Length: 435
Image (tube, rainbow, N blue to C red; front, side):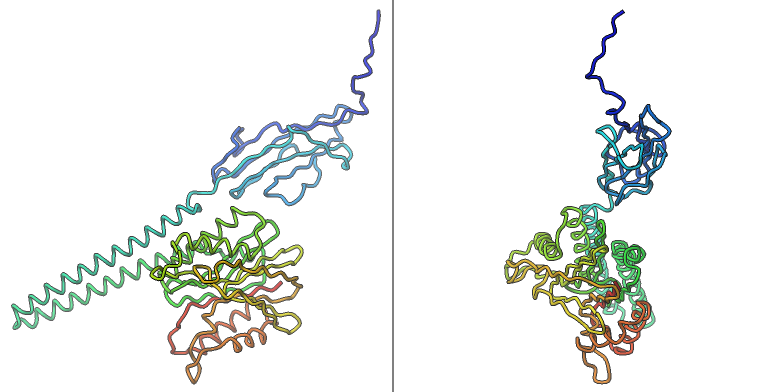
């Protein structure tokens, strides 16, 4: 017979090993979904490789982009499971090798998918909750004041008619007193619930400790809820931390703090690679639009002062931008200050200017401080004067070598000894970070 040989057919020398993503499983059940809800975050990826020459020499490595920072170590496992995935966009990739040096993949060895954020973490839900709380408190006050006004009128009428019924009059006055106490209790309960909401949106200290183990946060609201807030977020190897002081105290300041936290979360999730100065400039635009600030004389001038720092944990490069609040850091027993821009986050005559982005290189052992003006402006001492900036700076410098726990204790005890019986006049926030 006749044998035909085609030289164009691939030989064993130029055939490469191939890998195929065979299945994606949600909680171990196969799925073709590409978009998952926040609680569908337990995914398993199955894959297999083809190399007819020496199949026992096949190795795999994989990476989940958006979660893993680098490729996995080589192994013979043909599946991998990821659990507790955070909301975001991901791409799973797998490669094959027979020598551990040369790796191969193709279009069938990767898949992309998204996990949606839960409803309560979306901006519009948080804003709706704030508006509902504000409306509830407003209606509560309105109804309660009307009830008290009606009760007062009834009491005056009763006194006019029965001036001789002293005992009954006394009982009615006591009843009114109890009613007012109940009203105060209800109001306090509402504000305590508002504090729970504010505490829920503040970053957990355990989350901060995962990225910055040596830190402290001295947070002392003047009232039940605070107009000061601290912020923390992490993107890849960068951490964003801020200390903010909103206009007002108590419930009005707390509303502003909720807006500030929500806006910063949205900005960081929406924009990539914003520097510190750009972040504050964008935040100012969000605040002005939400409060409808146009510069008219009769409109609200609410806003916030803030000190914001972005730190690259790998390179120790840092960026700082400040709206009226500075950054202090101590190195080799010397205190350095990076001054802020003298304008707030909100309507201002300098608002045409962008916030400056300050860059610095940190060193191991540096101690960074971000703070509001509550500690500095507190009245106390023998002459009932303000604590002042120079005394606060010296206090930090004298204690920066101590552990962060000891620094926290020292600051708190110094503040209480200084004010003694004097009423706290402002919210107090001090953040310390050791690099």
